[in-house]
Image 1 (tube, rainbow, N blue to C red):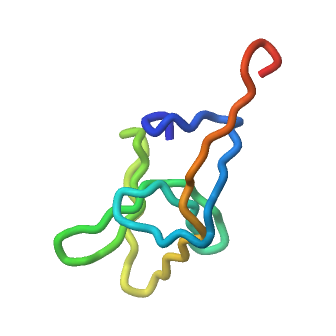
Image 2 (cartoon, rainbow, N blue to C red):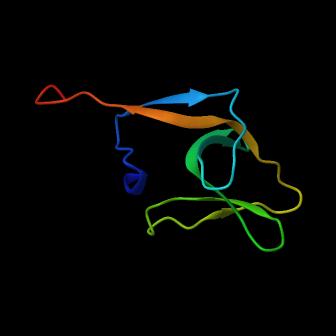
Length: 84
């Protein structure tokens, strides 16, 4: 999620009470795995999860799949300097 300013090793603060909207960066559960992606919706009303890195394809949800948005990412925390 480098396009959103999220780097490997960063700590995310996630608001579970905030309702996710299209364009939000969300922490979602697909199957049994967590993922951090941007929430998107196509013209037909189908939701997908999009990485800001073009090397990763969007996760398009089929009719049988359920998307559980665990929360909306609201802060990114990272350690500064050489200790990183």
